[in-house]
Length: 145
Image (cartoon, rainbow, N blue to C red; front, side, top):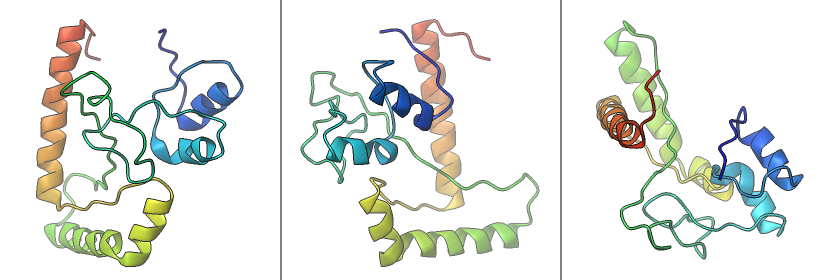
C-alpha cells in the first residue's frame, strides 16, 4: 500500500467512497454510517478489543497480527501554567459530562466508546504513547520531526 496523507478523516473518507483509494485506515465515527449503509466494508478494528458499534468486525490481532493494539483516543488539554484549581474544575466537569448516561448514549451511537480519566492518568497515557511511537518509528526507520 502507498500512504496518502489526507488532511483528516473527511477527505480520506470521500476518497474511499469516490474510488480514489481502495483502503483506508480511519476512525470508526466518520466511517460508521457508510459501513452501516453498506457503502464501505469494515475489515478490522485496530484497538485490542472489538468496537461496541461494530461487534461483528474482528480486531487486527484476531485477524492474524497478535499484539496489535492501536486505539484512537481524544483528550482535553489546557495551557501550561493553568492554575491547579482551574484544572481540577475542568477535570471534574468533563469527567461528569462523559459519565452522564445521555453523553454515553450519544457518543456510543456515533461509534465513540466513552471513557474518562483524570489529568494524571492522561499525562501517564501521553508519556506511554510517546515512548511507544518512538519505538515504532525507530523500528520502521521513520525520522522523528
